[in-house]
Amino acid sequence: MYQYQLTPALVPLEEPAAGGDGVAVVITSAELAQGPSIPGLEGLLRHTPSPQDARVCKAEVRAGCLCGTIVTPRQTKRELPISLGYLAGPGVLVLCDDSGTVHAAVQRLRRDAPHRAYTPGTLLCQLLDQLTVKDLRHLQALEDQLAQMEDRVLSDRLEDFNAGMIPLRKEIARWVRYYSQMDDMVCELQENETGCFRQGDLALLHTVEKRLGRLRGEAQALREYGMQVRELFQSEIDIRQNRIMKILTIVTTIFLPLSLVAGWYGMNFAGMPELGWKYGYPAVIAASVAIVLICLWLMKKKKFW
View 1: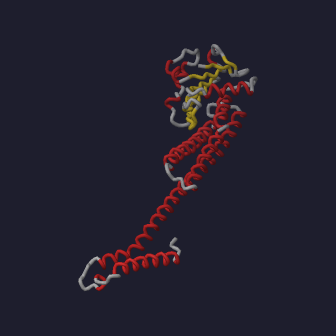
View 2: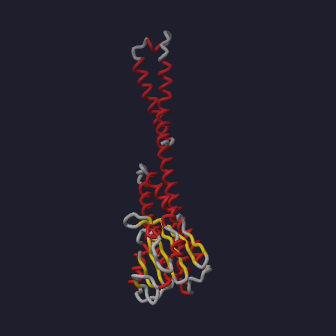
View 3: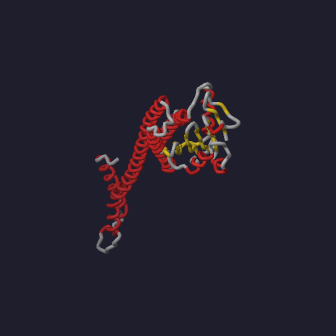
């Protein structure tokens, strides 16, 4: 658990201020379940959402406070899911996070602006900004993966395409859903029903909202790109199947008259003159070869291949 004083600067605290005024608390879900004894914050801690129960990004207004959850598609370097619960009350911000992302973001804010004063709303806005500012890098990585899948299709390497494409499409769908939920959440925060946000905070929320709109557009473009790659793969499969069917059709067309000859001369009627002719067998061989050559010439002339 980490405790920070919001004003006059964001600095760590050994013990929170009396009544929890002007304090930010970063806590894990395990510590939240144990019910830590922090004077003045017992009620807020009981109502703080846990990241383990988080499923969507949302903001809810309760009696005198604002709470909600944030669930991102990203993971930490230790492959931990990045999700958190938050609760902003009068002069207090509680952040419940198991991945260490919030603590790292707070340290970046302290390093970049060591003397800046915060309110709970200001710190929450800055954390939202930190969560989304580098998302374009992840979308570009997904676009590179789609481009690699497209190159595989164009080079006729279709094996295991679905094994790589299906997880990628699911990942893109998670990003689209994430930005849609975040956009709704930020719009709810901008209503400022609890008065947690100052005018500058609302301006930052507006900036985050515009960024989320651009990122959602990028994610939707990636979804369409994935559909195009999928359609390209299906067209290549159809072309390969058509090529195989063309070969089978050519083989069937060539051997159809030969089957007629084999069936005809396989009857062995006594009145068949070729049975008693010593050149009958070579003549049938020559006729069969001639039929094959004529079929091939006709198909070449009709541009069957």
